[in-house]
Amino acid sequence: MKTLIISTVLAVGAAAAMVANADQPVGSDNPHPSAYVSDSVITAKVKTKLAAKHMSTLTDIKVDTDNQGIVWLSGKAPTKDASDLAEMIAKDTDGVTSVHNKIVVQE
Image (cartoon, rainbow, N blue to C red; front, side):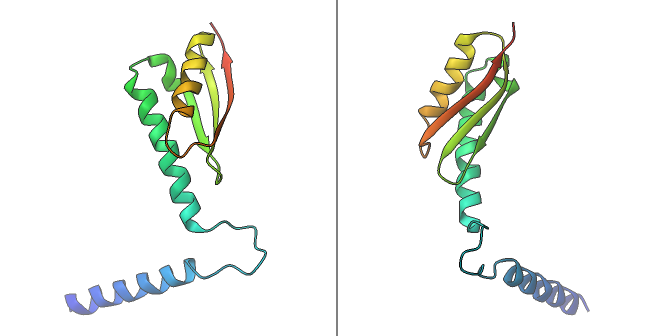
């Protein structure tokens, strides 16, 4: 009985994966799933570098990456130096093509 249940779950999961990964029609606005993986990897790298600086002020910064490797920084920083540091860290991350710094300085 366990084997039947496990087989059924695996079959349903495989079918769902095939439907989810079906090719998009030509001209579709939906990017390829690998673009999301690449974007999230870049975002994770930037966030990890920000956290490694051990500056609590950098934890209020939101990091987003688009499918072209452009990083968007937003949130709050207490000083211009902290904002500039976050931008420099993002620019110095593999896979980043450019950085848009929208961090608001609030002392």
